Picture: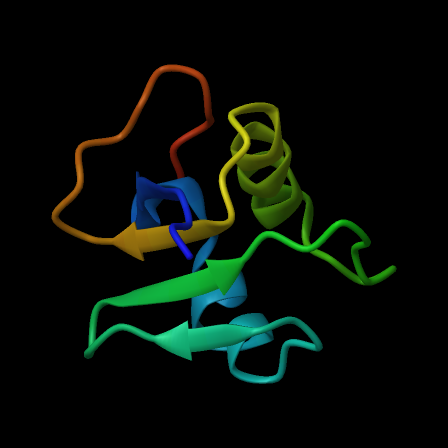
Length: 85
């Protein structure tokens, strides 16, 4: 099986999303070393999904991606807000 992954900057997420919410997420999420995450793009989203992560997953769905990889070394893209933290 081949799955499509969208690489995004961790700058598209708020600090609280990265450091708190993703650690307790009801989604399939996996830490990527010390500076990133892999997040599965599910069809249904939890009610408490942070808006910054929702924007990223909506973009991923529009591109038919199965996963989003957040990494601090990926350049931010113009389609999403960037948060400084």
